[in-house]
Each structure stands twice: as C-alpha cells, then as structure tokens.
Amino acid sequence: MDSDLKDLDLYGILEIQQSATEKEIKTAYRKKALQCHPDKNPDNPKAAQLFLQLSKILTILTDTAARLAYDKLVNAKIAAKLREKEYDSKRKKLIDDLAKRENEALANQNNTVQRNFEKELERLRKESSSLLAKERARVNELLRQQETEKEKIGSFKLKVKWKENGVYNKDSLTSLFSKYGDVITVVVLENKKCVALVEYKSKTSAINAKNLEVGYSNCPLIVSFLGDYGQDSKKSTNNHTSAPNPSTIFSAYQNPNDNHAENTSFAQAFSDYEAMILERCRKANKPQQENTNSSKINTEEPWIV
Figure 1: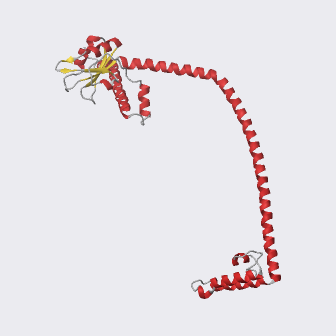
Figure 2 (figure 1 turned 30 degrees about the vertical axis):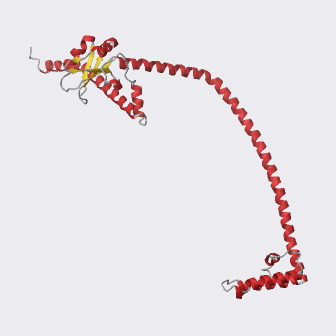
Figure 3 (figure 1 turned 90 degrees about the vertical axis):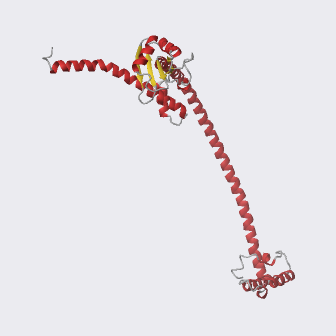
C-alpha cells in the first residue's frame, strides 16, 4: 500500500461505506472518475493527480488482501480514537475531581482567613473606641475654635463702597464712622476704586455703623461686613453675615477645582483682610519710627537746644 494512501479515507473519497461490495466500489469509482477526469477539468492542475489516485484506490479496495490490510488499519485508528475518547473522559473526570477538592480546600482556607479577619477587626474596634472618642472631642474643639475665630474676624470689620472717586478719603471716613464707636483703623484700598475697610473695637459699633451709616447725600455709602460680597449691591440690612475663616480662604486656594465664584470671593476677602492688617502694622510702627528719628536728630546735632 502506498504510504500516501494509508492516511486517507479511501471509502470517504469514493463516498461509500466500509461494508460496500466490490460491485458498489467499481460503480462509485466510475462515477468519481468521470467527475475528476482531466479532460473535464482543464482548469484544475491537480485533476490528473486525483484521477491517478482514484485508480490506486480502486486497485486497493478490489484486492482482497490489500483491502483487508487497509480495513485493519482503519479499525485500529477507530479503536485508538475510542480509547483516546475514553481516556479523555477519565482524565476530565480526574481533573474535575481534583479541581473540586482544590476549591473545597480553598473555600475552607478562605473561611478560616475570614474568621480570623473578623476577630482582628472586632479587636481593633474595641481598642479604637477610646481613640475615636478622643478624636471626636478634638474635632469638635477645632470646630468650636473655628467658629470663634470666624466670629472674631468677620464681626468687627466693615467694607465700605461708593460710586464717585475722590469724594471720600481716610480722614472723612474716620470722621463718619467714629460716631458709632472706637475705630481701630481705616484703609482706603489703592488697588480698588471707591472701596475702603473700617475696623472697630466693638462688635456693636460695627453693627450700628453697618445698619445706620448712609454717608453724604450726594454720594451715599454701601456698607457691609467684610466678606459679605454677595450682598454689596444692597444697602445695609439687619442680616448679619460674618467674613470667611482664614483657614477656609486658604483651603479655597488649595482647591482650585471648587466653585470659581466662591473662590474669587474668598480671594477678595483675604486681600481685604491683608490690607487691614498691613495698615495696623504701619500704625503700630509709626510711633517707633518717630522716636527713632527724634533720637537720631538729638544724637547727630547735640548743639540744637
């Protein structure tokens, strides 16, 4: 038997069963040969090779000894496939059993780990209860301090606005607002037209000034608490709004993705508050500078009486 035919399904090529008679084999060969004849397939370069292969197949299947040898080879292949299929079935069952045992062992291990974790978690909960109580107390104290600081910063400072430039200055504003109480400082902002800041020692004085001061009749004032920018367009009202906490202002700078309008308000409040602090520092340093200048004059010119 040719080596190139032993791996082929000769019965399948002729489209017959393995139990076909010799007459059926010859009939199938003639039918297939007519289909594959080179004269009928001029465009197929393999037609001649296929036609020759059909002749060899006919020779093998019509020879009793050769057909018997081929049938033994075919039966051996079929038996091998059956054994392989059975082996695959057993191997699959073995693999499934092994996977099942592994999953059960892993589940038991996970349960053990879960139980240990829950025990540790419960231990941590018990141990951390006192720490959590202390932390809550600390946070509450910080919140209380922030509220106190917010009250201190925003309650005694006013923002004053007017429309016509040059109408008011530091002296005129000091005179207007001093009638409500002791004014610590007045700052006319150089970077903003017609805007000033007034700081009182007393919260009551600041509230009275906000609610009562109207300014000159030809150029009225708009008075609001420092940081109350959302209500600057209205004349003073009885609603009291304190300025933002400096920590809040700083957090606004550290979080630029927050609301832009709110960040702008915080930035303005911080700028105004900074101007107020600088003015107070200048007032505090002014007497020292005058004393220093006086001592320098007396030192350098001792002959002056």
